[in-house]
Image (cartoon, rainbow, N blue to C red; front, side):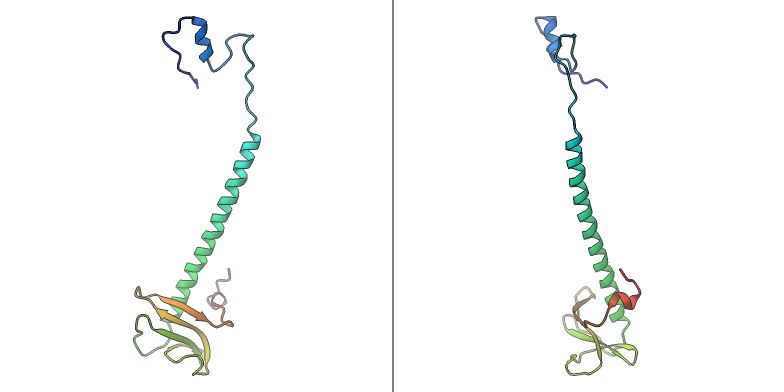
Length: 145
């Protein structure tokens, strides 16, 4: 691979052309020493590794959030209820006799095992409002992360 530099066509002196060569044209020419790029490369590798590691952490967090959202929606949609939920309203999920039940009754008013409170969004997704501190969704689904 040659790295030809532009040589002026109208160079008056043929020796002037050698000033544009990428290599010395005589033994008396200046010594060409390649640069030591070790420091540059190691700084670049370190920086890229840190940035990519951070991206992987963020991707993992986003992935787990999507999985959790899926599992919460599955849990609520598979729960027992006999009404059609209204978009934007808050509902509460309980465990009653081993069965998950969705209710309009607030946790302070009904003394069953409360799992969490949810709101139905316009895109038909259940948004988690608050969950019971003693309910572990990942343990319930068997997907320990």
